[in-house]
Amino acid sequence: MSALLGDFLVRAALAGVGVAAAAGPLGCFVVWRRMAYFGDATAHAAILGVALALALQAPVFAGVLIVSLAMAATVATAAGKTYAMDTMLGVAAHAALALGLVAVSFLPGVRIDLMAYLFGDVLAVSRANLALIWTGAALVVSMLAWRWRRLLTATLNADLAAAEGVDPRREQLVLTLALAVLVAVALQVVGALLITAMLVVPAAAARAFARTPEQMAGLAAAIGAASALLGLRASWVFDTPTGPTIVASAVALLLLSVIAAPVLRLLSRAPRTG
Amino acid sequence: MTATLVSASRLGVRYGGARALRDVDFAIARGEIVTVVGPNGSGKTTLLRVLVGATAPSEGRVRRAPGLRIGYVPQRLAIDRTMPITVDRFLALSGERDPKARAAALTRVGVGGRGDAQMTDLSGGQFQRALLARALLRRPDLLALDEPTQGLDQPGEAAFYKLLASVRAETGCAVLMVSHDLHVVMSASDRVICLNGHVCCEGAPMAVAAAPEYRRLFGLGTDGALALYRHVHDHAHDAAAHDAAALREPAP
Image (cartoon, rainbow over all chains, first blue to last red; front, side, top):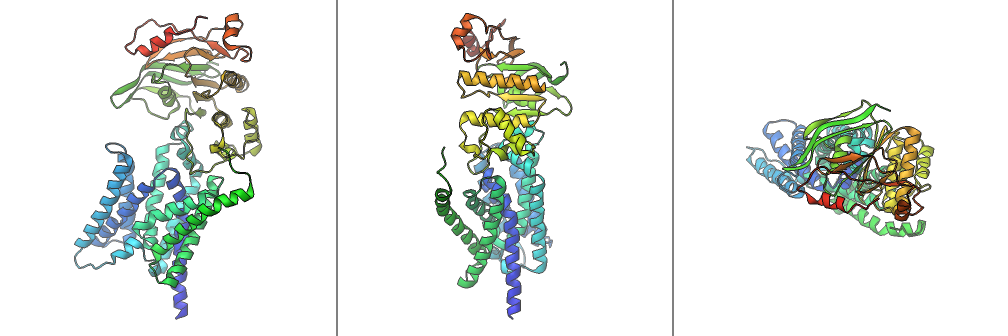
């Protein structure tokens, strides 16, 4: 009995750490490029993907990946044309969520656990799920590592990148792709509604302690992984839903970093000027 | 010396319905220093962005020499406070792997020893120099600078121009610079182009460094790095701004 318990907890822990490892560095770009709403739109589209996959009896992972990708590509190209970026993304994010929930209710004879898709169900991660999560996470991390210098240059200044032969639109596309993959793998861990939190919160917590983009990416991954383990433990102890508890742990670490950073700075060197 | 690095013919750029540039012909050769001046909204930055490939022209075409390396210094580079980045790491993004070369580039532009500072902690002038250091580390064939002397006083501007002239002499790179000052330009400019949506006039800056009037205008500290450009306009405009500005031209 205890071996079984250990097994699904270990799988849940590994799934959380895998998602965090990819969400940390990718989340840094979301923070630097102010793409949080973009992340929301992509993540919320996942529910529509779930509905479509179930209707077509296709794998949920594939449905989510395709619909999230379509959503990300649509908002990336349509942005800023008629409405301001945040209005457009706000519409897209909530439209995707509402349509997804409506579509799910139309599915004949399917009783799906909607809560699992909205808030994650990491304790139900199977071996196959885990393999998929780690493959997706590894894919995201290698995409970022492969194009790291180009992505950073395009993030700093699009014109500078273009003058140096880096097409900023291509780098945007890489991030869009990475985001869609991450949404697909993180869905089961934290759920569609809280994926953006796993991107933004650890990156924000890492900011205060980092001096370079690389440090911030690494720290964000570590803080995300710590949140996953802490959240898993807390949800076990307090019998709370795991996905939200993981995010709550990340927020707790963020608050801790906000308090700790100025203290550490005072201890280590003179206050910064400017 | 005659190898053309970038050329453009019948260039036109529209933003929505508004025309930013029309009928611009342009060429810059290896080793040349070209200064582009013009009033606000005259399309200087747009021209530079089209030439370096940051935006596509609506009309005409741009030809860049194959394998052309551009060191670009944009007018404004706002680093988001959410991104931590040291000066040294910023320079490394140019592709320069040697830390000694990066430190040397900083010394060269006059901000030696600031490699460990955060980019966001630099003053305006230091930031501008760090941008130049990064552009130089690209070992460019063409340095493209958009108002690089903004925020510098006149001696600072003169020192910056002397640095550019020595870089050109050393590496043989071309320099294409947009300047906000209609009349006082880098004296080492081979050509000055006055832009106001189209090319208004073009010519060499006046070599007046030795004239006593020049000394009175700029003092001795600038050491001949600055020169006057006399506008010769053979046409009238609806946009009166440029002509009004040209009328305020100080007599050399």
